[in-house]
Length: 257
Image (tube, rainbow, N blue to C red; front, side, top):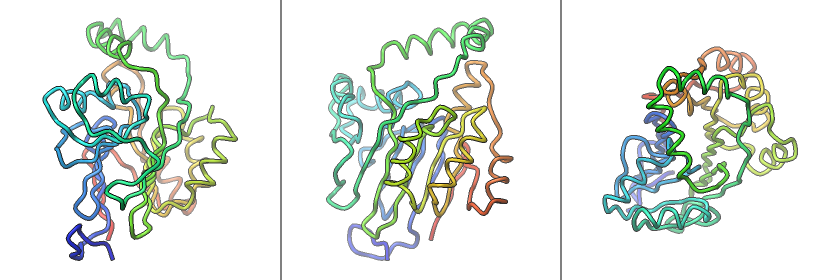
């Protein structure tokens, strides 16, 4: 049975909320884990930074500049950059949070696709927004995005795959990821436009109990005038194939008993 830190029974195991953009909030036994926070950051949160891009990190950076000393789980390569913004309590995946929740990570190569024409069109339609976006990206450190898994004391596992699954995903990387992270209770996986078939094929082999096909990119792409996708059709196809899949978009939430 899941319990609070004081040992009292908790009425549910896990709650998941999509806060917008790449922000995913996971609540477990009185603890809040915020993956790439979008809405806000509270001192008691455990912030999990899966990448350094502005849509993943801006809210955290602003909180640190405002004096927050929130705990941040991030790639060690990002620690000096985060310290420049403030005084976070830093740790890297590969250990435990409060000696209870195991945090593991695996870097991945993001999708490399030629969208120069689309980006040029976006700049013409909204030059100010496009210029701000690319200036922000130029100020970020170099770091690969990461797949992150949380293993709770009762054995339940939450796997955040980010946008690691796409047509160019390395076959050996995929094999190792499926071998190490397969069978997770809850999976959050991004599905970028044009990658619906690739994600659907690859995610099945992870054999997750509950698979959340997640919008992690549409809002940013819409700002830039780039194409977006609708998740209901690939979710329906996965469910027809026997996968417990659900669409996970901004404002949505799920509770697991």
